Length: 324
Length: 220
Ligand SMILES: Cc1cc2nc3c(=O)[nH]c(=O)nc-3n(C[C@H](O)[C@H](O)[C@H](O)COP(=O)(O)OP(=O)(O)OC[C@H]3O[C@@H](n4cnc5c(N)ncnc54)[C@H](O)[C@@H]3O)c2cc1C
Ligand code: SF4
Ligand code: FES
Ligand code: FES
Image (tube, rainbow over all chains, first blue to last red; front, side):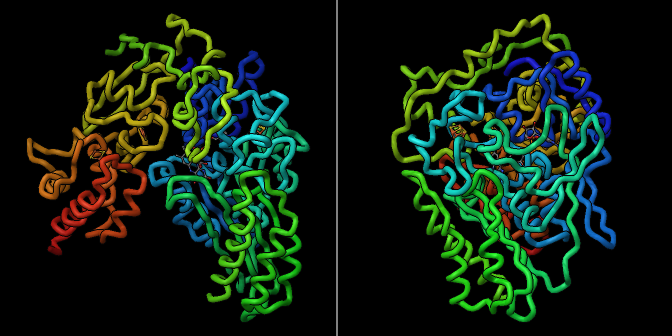
């Protein structure tokens, strides 16, 4: 492995300061939560940071605190702790679906949301858009696992399981940096490759994701996370659905439905959401929702299977909530 | 041991597998690819080598840090290069070679150790991140020459075939048994989901853990 300098940060502000200092010295930096993505990138050479700022020693950003208006979750909470929390079913289930127990025991919420793409070209050192080049190898290559929504010029799928759950819960993203703290909506936080092909989010060098805020929901709200993989465990989603519904009996009062594994950012299904509001969750309605979910899908040559898979995943997710 | 600066296990320039387009086989590509890389068709071979971009490291300027690890109850003070993984320190500096390296990238579980009681992949943790932690390795399971109940159950149920995955399986299962009384086979399967057995000896492994749990729980 290349040489690197590890710096333990004791707080979020300490981490920001350490990052500023290293950047000021002309060094490149990376934050490390659990390091489960980062260390692999360092070994593979896709991350060549000089300085690693270890956030595991930060003590002020791993708590869950609730008040009248919502719940604040520190970004350094581990996925094991998140999966055991009672904030929301969709979030706990999404956390429990990540990787393996060994990964979840160290992986953090923030690191999950900010993990880099797992496109095999990028991970293997191809000089594509994500590594600063000016072409995408997947678009005419092996694109079985690539995006059917939001693609161009890069066709990555946003790899995070936690991000769709957070977006479905209408979370805001707390970004900490040299200028202090700012709170961003999902729409502001995640960026399409057409906006910036190099990054998946707006974080500038030296800025970190320190936590999320989740607004409180009506008591008749139900939620779930449904993830389809090409094996039973230990891998990212082929397609996943994060669904949050407010139900009066079986009638939908509000719906928030976000896809993972099929788009370049967590993909909110606005049309499906407004279609569902006011309707009873019958089989016919659910089937229509599944069809509507993929109305604008743009599959590449080899990922067409994701289209019916996405419809089916949306249908199953909605039916499972209707049965509750 | 503190002043020994051993090279990486592959000679100080630990690199991903070569990706020279002319030499790269499909197998190299797949082995080097990320966790989700499973394809059934050929892939293009246009990659540049990330390794080529890496400069040869100058050993004299390699940053090191002094850390403290409690391993199997024994406290160690170790000078580590910041880039060393926990498994490298356990095996190469502390001579605890029971912990195995299979994939070196969170994809097999052979390197599983307990960090403050919880199973983690020691190949995917820098040793400096474990500063101050309590680590348990497979060497710490037997007490006074007596195998743990779980280890004995592995022997009795033919849990190991080639045995390479066994240390990792034992560590994950030890954590399960510490937290769950008499787990059933479904609970064992889901706890051990992050430990591959290339010999595919899963049924025997699950039976061994279930039977150890019954013994410990006093249910059998
Ligand atoms: C075999 C395997 C299977 C996996 N399966 C899944 C899966 O099923 N689902 C899934 O979602 N992921 C999966 N992952 C990816 C990854 O392990 C997880 O996403 C994990 O949650 C990442 O969290 P971390 O804290 O370890 O991130 P890290 O590795 O610490 O960080 C990831 C990236 O984010 C940056 N970063 C870290 N913290 C911050 C911060 N606070 N602010 C800004 N940037 C930051 C790092 O510099 C790095 O670039 C898998 C990985 C492997 C190796
Ligand atoms: S999909 Fe994105 S990461 Fe993959 S080759 Fe294309 S540009 Fe690179
Ligand atoms: S060697 Fe660590 S998971 Fe395979
Ligand atoms: S016994 Fe051979 S890998 Fe498990």
